[in-house]
Image 1 (cartoon, each protein chain N blue to C red):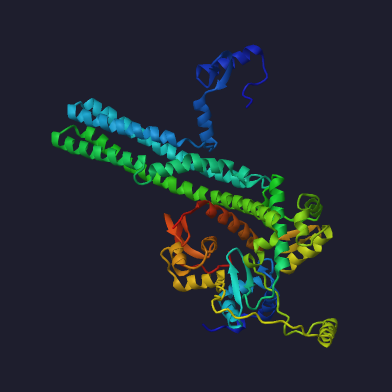
Image 2: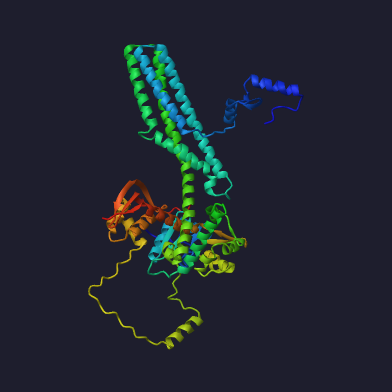
Amino acid sequence: MNIIPQSEQSDVSNVIDSLLNVDILVPVANNPNRFEINVVIMEFVSYLKNEHRLGLSEEIEAYLKRLELLANKIAQAVQAGESSEIVKSARELDLRMREVIKKLQHDEKALEGIAEQAKMANKQIPLRQRYAEVISSWDEYLEPMVEMIDLKGVFDRTVRVVENQLQNIIHKMDVVGVLIDELEIVRQAQARMMAMEKVAQHTLKRGTEILLPLREEVRINNSITQGASLALAIIRKQGINDLKVETRVPLLAQSHKNVVSSSAGIEKYIYGLHHFEPTLNRFPARHSDRKSPDKVITFNQVKRQVIKSLPIADIMTWLIENYAMVSTDNIIEWFAMLTRGDRFHKQRLIRQNYFTKTHRISLRSYQILQKIYANSNR
Amino acid sequence: MQIQTDELKQAANIYRELLRGYHISHQDHEWYPELSNNQEQYQKLFELLGYQLVCDPRGFYYFLPEETSSVSLNKTAQRFAMIIFILIELYADEGKDSQFILESEYIPRTDFAKIIKNKYQKLLEQVEVFNEQDIESKIFEKLVKFGFASDYMGRGYQMRPPIHRFFDVCLDLHKEAQSKLVIEETSI
C-alpha cells in the first residue's frame, strides 16, 4: 500500500509523525526506525474488506472459563450486598458474551471464505492440497467446537452452570430487594447468554454444512486413490484374476445364442461337427459321505433379500444371523457393498463388537431404513 | 402399475443399446431425457422382459446382468479396470487431482505413451495390452462402445459418469482393507 507520496524527506517525516501520533503506525519492537501498521487498524481493514480469519476453538474455551468466573463473582457480590460489584461484573459478563457472539459470527464468515477459496483453487493440483485449509479447519476448529458445544461438552456445561447461577442470583436479588437497574443488568446478561447459546449452535450447524461436503469429497478422493493403488498392488502380486473385476463390475453383453453368426462361424461349426470324435470319460465313483458343494450366494441375492426385509435395525447383525455359514470375509464384503454409496437410506450406529463363527468384528454398523430410488435428473 | 407406452418413444433404441452393454448417461441426448423422465415405467418394462435396469443416482443407466444369462466379459472388464486404476495412480503421482481429470477433463492420446513407458507395462501385459495401439483399440474404443467414455475432438478420450462404477471398486477395496484392520482373530 503506497500511502506516502513522492515528496521531500521532511514531508515524509511529517506524515510518519502524524501517523505515529494517531497510532495508525507503530514502531517495530527492536527497531525504532521501522514501522508497521497497528494490528487494530489491520483488523478493521480486514473487517471492511470482509476478510475473516478463523480463530481458535481454545479462544472460546478461555472465554467460557471467564464467564463462569464472572458468574461466581456476581453471586459473591450479591451475598456480600456489594451493588457496585454486581453491576461491574454483570456488565463484564454481558460484554464477554457479546464478544463470544461476535467471534462465532466472525468464524462462520471465515469458514465460508475458506470453503469458497478451496472451491476456486486450481483444479490441477491434488484435492488434498487444494482443501488443506478445509481439512485443518475441520480438525482444529470445527471438531473441537463440536465436542465443546455438544451435550455434556464444556460449552453446554458452562452455559448450564452460569444459567443456574444467574437464576439463583435473580431470585436472591428479588428476595433481598435491590435497585431495579442492577436486576435489569443481570437479566440482560441472562438473555444474552441464551442468545450466545443459539449463535453457537447456529455457527456449528452452518460450519458443518459448509465443510462436511468438502471433507467428504477429500475422503472419497483419497479412498479412490488409495483403492486404485491397492488394486494395482494386488494385480502385481497375485494377478488380475484375483481381483474378480467381473463380479465387481459385471458388464452385460448381448447373448448371441439365438443369433445366426457369420457364414465363417457356421462353416467352422459344421466342420467341427463333421470331425467330432467322442472321447471316453468315466464318471467318478459316488461317495456317500461326500457333501454337495456349498451353494454360492451372490451379492445380488443378498441385496434382494435385504430389500425384502427392510427396515433392518442393524445390518451387520442381520447379515451374521441370515448368513451364519458364510465366511467372515464375505460378510464384511457384503456389509461394505450394502452400506457404501446411496443404495439405501441409512443411519450410522455406535461402534459394537459382532461375532461370526470365527471372528470378532469391531465396527460401526448401520440401520437400513429404505431403498433409494435414483433420481437421475440430478 | 400400467405402462404408458405412448411416452416411451425411444424404447426400442434404448432397449437395443442397453442390451449390448451400453451405459446411457446424460451425454446421450436422444435417450437419457426420455429414460430419466420415465424411469419407473422403463424399470417395469425391462423387468417384464427379464432385465434389471440400474438407475445410478450419479446420472447413468445400465442393465445388470443376471448370473445365468450374462455372457462373460472377463477380459473387457479387467482391461477397463486396469486402465482406470493406472490413470488414477499415474495422475496422482504427477501431483494432479486424478479424480477431477477423469471426471471433467480428457485423457490425451499422448498419455498412452506415458502409460506404456511407465512402470505399468508388465501390468498391461496381463490383459494382453502391449503398446499404444492396443491401449486405443482394446481399451479406449471399447470404453466408448460401452458408454464409459467418448471421443474428445479426436485428441483423446473423455470419461463419462459410468466411470464411477470403477471408482466404486477402488472405494470397496479401500473399505475392505480398512475393515480387515478392525477384525481381530479370536479363538471362539
